[in-house]
Length: 310
Length: 310
Image 1 (tube, each protein chain N blue to C red):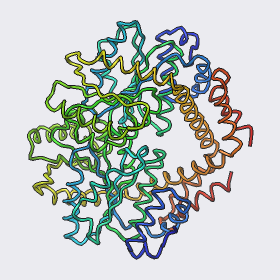
Image 2: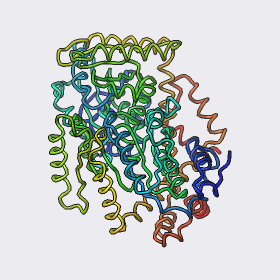
Image 3: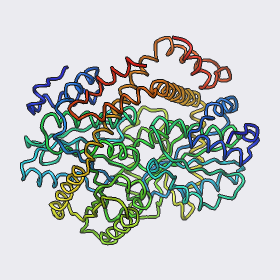
Image 4: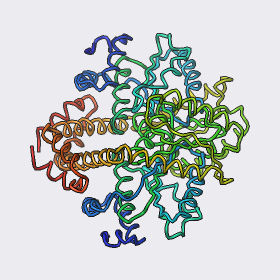
């Protein structure tokens, strides 16, 4: 399987899909692919949507897609599934595929497993977004499940990060306070028709007021109901408002630079590591570990020995 | 600040605390410290406790500590906080410190932020556990919050991983199915006095039955109530049973080997990266990124250039 750069640039579904597979499977063509995409980036806006399981991110996204489609925008979705390094598949896939936009020609949906390293995840999400970007897609959305490193990581790949919680998320909000405040550009309290929505709203607003007194961008706190289709237009508006804020303050360029650094460090770490781990070094590690436990040197000493041989 | 290896081996609180600070802050002494600890490991048993926010992990742990203390065991806790890379502090710390065992001489508690890389997290949690282990502590517990990569990562550092859910976690269990099955050695349904506990119990049991037909170890599913102190003895028993299973099947050695590999790879990746990123290379990256965006080569090309210079 190789990639079809012309097909990607023309927005052809098959070419896009193949390119995404190359990235997901970390095939050897990645370098050539990302190199070919490089001159064709900068059109798309990149949005991260994150929050705990059950917050209704998929339904919210489903609604948001509808609003965007009405204004003629094309959309590319990358669902990042944090549990798949073991299972080998992206379990979100099924959920995402149920979305009614799946057959819409202007909507591209892809699940992506988080195999490999942390840095690797951001970089791959970012490479995947570059494929969509080069294909001329307008809005790229990274959807993630969970709380923790994966979000932080995906937030790095996004221009605007939306944190979705539900009225019941009180505990999580408390526990995640500092981390959420750092990654959220927009807070959404979804399922706002449920009891406790106003309390959650006040809590998050209080948090925002407290922490960001001197910041330029104060994250808006929105109430939505994906099921009742409420608050979605306002969410779309706030995304646009954040985009304008980024543009006016030269922050989009800084985000591009940060992503570039991440990518460079990833390429270099990969190459350094694959250059280092020669068969001889792998063998030395294996034979050392097969010794009786008291005859195994400390990792630091074994590392020194490994550096001495070729 | 330097470390006091004799103090650590003697189980002195101050020496242990200083060594943990060296690891947490990734100070230059880490290599010398871990090298000095290396010959004194293998006594402690390492347990990971994970689950969504609000599952009551801290209370459960609080109860478990009580059971262990009654049998004279000493305990070292490492709370891994997934949201701290940004906030720079470990927010779980406060919660953990509220535990009534904080002043018990046989209980050591430490929060740890997840700065840096994914591999880095496992390795640092593991280094911290090595400090406790060398100090003669019997039971080491990694406590994490969240769902996703951090857990998987910490599971790698543990001998036994306990996944704690609550009756309300239905959604999460569904979403995390495959990932949970891979990391859980023991399932705990905490807050089992709440409605839905039996349903959750049956669901998890069904999941276990379905997936692990031919596996040697079938994860037990326990119901506990930390508040009512119910089911804690059985949990302690199941931990012992899993430990015996690991010992009888030579799996503790395999876990040691896996951790050793992880540590070696981390040391080497760190050194390769710091050797590579000379001032000249950093400067080239910076000046390149300051060019007009259309004059910036692709990351792949810039990486090639970086490899050519010294």
